[in-house]
Amino acid sequence: MQIVLWIIAACEVIRAVQNAIQLHMLSRDRGARENAYSEFVRSLKKSDREFVRELLEEFERQEDHDGI
Image: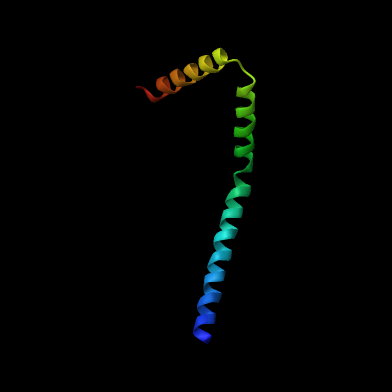
């Protein structure tokens, strides 16, 4: 019976460590996530023509940067 309790305790410790790691990564990535949300909302305010034009310009910049 004691062995079972030790196994359960070990599993709970592992789960607590995994949750702590996830929370740490979530809090560390908060700035980038908020920036992505604001950029998405900003893109919704543009017309379709402006959105496509900027998308193509970004694609061309990346293509030139990669040297393709």
